[in-house]
Length: 344
Image (cartoon, rainbow, N blue to C red; front, top):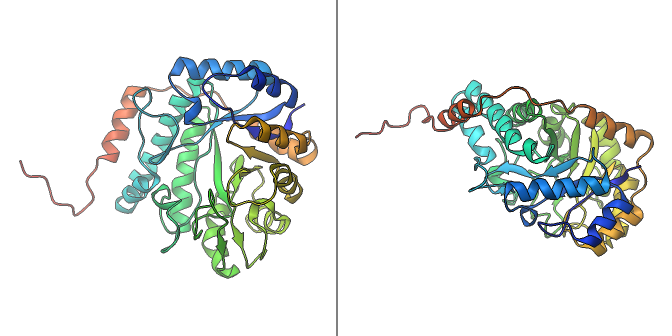
């Protein structure tokens, strides 16, 4: 049976000690980063070997957003625009913006699915505000919850049409973070009513997506001390309660600088707070072993939510990839209304 964590790997090939770890620890999923990715055949081989060790159905995740966050890129895979590019197109023509986002998701899926990657940590539901740290920045689709949610839903739809599950992040919102949670713990002091009408609203509109990822962010209006990842109040009252998210909930990377305590303590606390799955990304085997020592076997409601997410996968539909890429490029190249015409 699977254990309640998702693990990274150290490099582009599967080391013998990693193979034994995957076999014995039985993680629910695997996540890849640039350090694991060289060329298509190598990625396929790495995934096949990992699945042989863990089990054929194990989900394989990646962060493939576009812009600054794109683990697979040229020359072997296309580059994609940052999320803000969809927002700019949406401002000019909402229908075109949503069509472009849907096409972007479908084309990303067309890149991932043949490799064996079947989960993308996309879309973002974060609503940034002026003065926030740039860790979200142009990854966001806009600065209003309805616009963000509409574009996020279109991206998720495109991914699912291509046989790839979306992960909505970072619940219940990373847009107000005043520091980068990769390094330090952000503390948001905004009052609850403002959070409900903006940050939480965006995720409320995305609550039916199959998988979600928490934010390592403190919201003092709800829990003055613990970040969402390790706060039973944030997960129970806000993510599962006010937002109503019913999918499988994973932590953001448990090794990030925002969290305190040992890796084992972080794992234990995140699970106790209500995360169904703990995500560990850096590929350091000693930390992977610590996560595995504290991650329980998936059972009960967590197992049902994880199984429901996997059941949402469907085979990719037919695709005229060349035509779709041309359409996507044409949409993204549209000049903004009112922009001066080029003169030759």
